[in-house]
Image 1: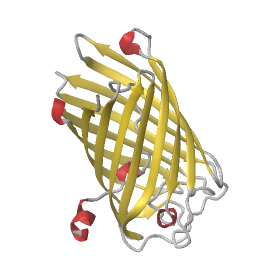
Image 2: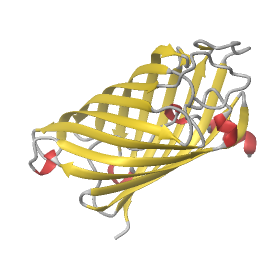
Image 3: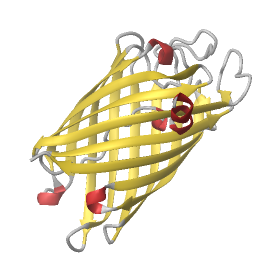
Length: 270
């Protein structure tokens, strides 16, 4: 059973998989999701000593979210990973609370939200260069803005941007950014082009893989670009397929290929 799990599991989008879109779900509708991903890279930029072989990272993320009120949204996730530096094991747990200030669905010019994220990271993941976290307890202030265009009951086209400023219980702060342009075809097929960035402001440039202790002291940078396709099955949920490629990296794993499969199932608790 363990070997089967290890084959299926993957490291979810190099972490930071909590909801980013500035549109909340229906009130008291629970969103359950499972993310599976396979990530592969060969080199770490500015490594003191390079990896002896390619890093094939696998893992699984299980999460849920809900909007208890019109302007509030909560989601949480737990992540398990399997990499060359740690066999299948618990990696991190995180929770996020957001507030919606503007909602373009009900007539505001844009949708605008802000929130806070708290994350606990295991000691094994903190010692793994594939893990993107800074220290044992990471926190972020987040914000997102977006706009939808529609011609009927469902949106046809939308774009949004997400940003976060973070700080751990040790080390230097970081910034994250994410942006996407999405198209919706008959509310059955959804396509997206996306970009993801992550910048840490530690004082060190060199990455010591053998004695790694998180990215809290490292001046790291990365930019990923990708595409995704989502198939909606309405009451049966949706499947999302995503591919990303790391196109820029400093003091971070470089030329990473990310393959993601995500299943999401919404259901009402009232």
